[in-house]
Length: 211
Image 1 (cartoon, rainbow, N blue to C red):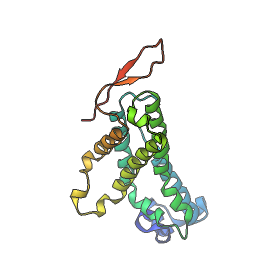
Image 2 (cartoon, helix red, strand yellow):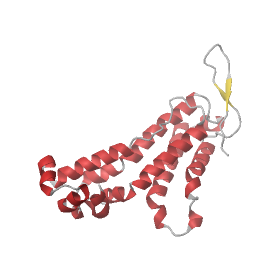
Image 3 (tube, rainbow, N blue to C red):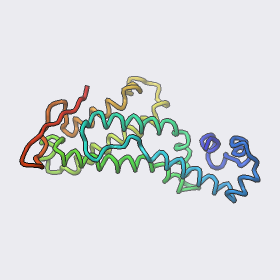
């Protein structure tokens, strides 16, 4: 995908692709049939890799701050490493609409993963009572989730184009700060939280570190 990231679909000639891959153009056409088929397959594979964040968010939260920081760090690193390719795909709306749609898949999958994790936080008693008792609780949870993914996406895709450092959290602390604000929006602090009893009527407590 180097040629695509450099010049987009139109500029990524089969000759350039062959040079980068160390093969001849005949080999490309023999295996893929056309440049379009080659680019579609390559983009599909790259985006598929970006859709997987490892380590994933656990099904049962035990340390929200730590789990989210690791997950956000990985997501940011992956998107930053592929932002040129994603930008080219995002700009292909008119001529190759499916490329533009593919470019948003990593963010969509991150949204889905975070959605499930937030529901687990609610289920296991991590989320603050003020949020739980809000009449529009589900919308509040979704808004917090959307802001976290949006902050990471904007950071990964646009940070390098802004020359005013005061508008950005330092890159090395970005994930931690975004997670701090997200957890505070959910009413999760570094204090002890009660978990609803599930076995024998006992109540356990849980903590998370936001420092």
